[in-house]
Amino acid sequence: MKRFLLWAALLAPCSAVAADLQTQLIGARVTGEFTLGPSIFYVPEGQWLLAARQTWTGNLQYVLQGPKFAGVVLFDVREQQVARALWVRTNIEPVLGTRGWVKEEDPCKVREDIYLHRELGANYQNQYCIQVNHRLPFFAGGTGVVRDAQGWLVDNKLPLPRAMVGVHFARIDRAYNTQLHYYFNPELDGLAPSAAAKWNASEWHRDRVGKDPARAAYLEALAKWAGDAASPVYAGFTDAKLKAAFPQPPFPAKR
Image 1 (cartoon, rainbow, N blue to C red):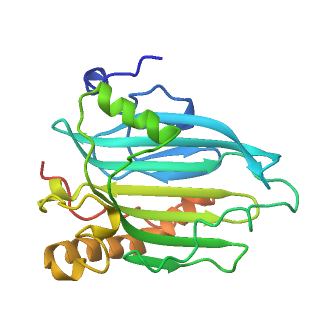
Image 2 (image 1 turned 135 degrees about the vertical axis):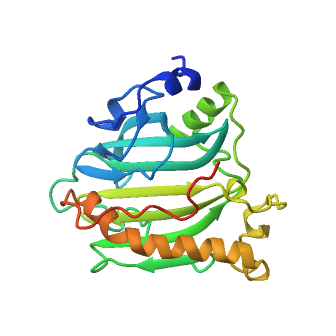
C-alpha cells in the first residue's frame, strides 16, 4: 500500500483526530490528543503526522491467544526534518480473567544503565514507571510499526535522526500493557550531533553525559518534564478525566 506523502498531508486542514488513531489514514494530521482503545494519549504542540499504524493479536505464555494490540508512530516534521517522534503500543482490549501480564513482560524492569528510572506504581501487579534514555541509532533495525515508520520517512525523503532522547511512560497491570514514548531531536534544539556509533559509547550515556553541561542540562530538563507529565499521562492511560493540563515539553520549537 502506497504511503500517504508528506506534501499532501501538509496541504490538509489541521485538526485533531477524534476516532481511534489505528483506524485513520496514514498522513493524518494529529493535534491535542488521540485514542487507542480506552486510553487517551496527549500530543505536544507541533506539526504531527501519522506515519505508521498496526493492529495485531498478542500472546499469553507464548502459546495462548491474547488481546488485540494497536501501535502507532507519529512524527513532528519541521522544514523537512524530524523534530520529535511519538510511539505508542497498547492492548486495546483487556486481558480477561485472572491471567494477566504480570510475569509475562515487564517494561518497568529497573535499569541501572539509563539516565532516569522512576517507579510510580502501587505494587508489582499495578506498575507505572517513567524513564529518560537516549536511543542510538534511532529506530535502527525496527520491526512492525517501527519498520513501517522508517519506510514512511524514506518515501518522504526525510532523514532519520542519528540519535534521539526519549521520555518513556509504561503501565502494566492485570488487564493492560501500555507503553508511550516521546522522542526529541537534540540537534534541532541546538546541541552538537552525536559522534558515537553505539548506544553505550554515546555522549548521552549516563556515565559520560556529566562531562558535557549542555547535554546534562537537556536530560535534566526532560527528566523534570517527565515528572510533571506523569499524572496526566497516567490519567490518559486509565481513561480518567484529565486532572491537570498536559504540560508542554521543554525546548519549544524555534525552527
